[in-house]
Image (cartoon, rainbow, N blue to C red; front, side, top):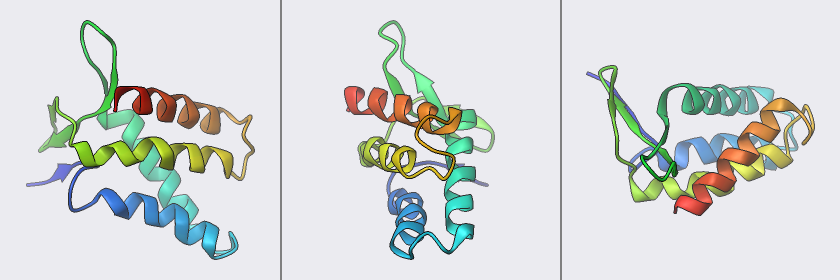
Length: 111
């Protein structure tokens, strides 16, 4: 059994990957790579939009089945995504940074 979530018990893990990279002088590239791969997974697997309002939220996935609910602890992701976008090695104008900035803004609105 497995569960993908940005909620309780794992909420800080994603943020710490990014902060380890930043606080380490951006030398430990593995942490940024882990963060970026996790954000790709967030966008591919967990990012959802409510109906009919189209509010963006981070759902969950358990055993390949989508769970359409967002843990309130996942609201931290809006700021984390913005920080990740502004520190993206490819620059703020890169497709990835712009994607993450848009998602962070949408999540902040939802929260």
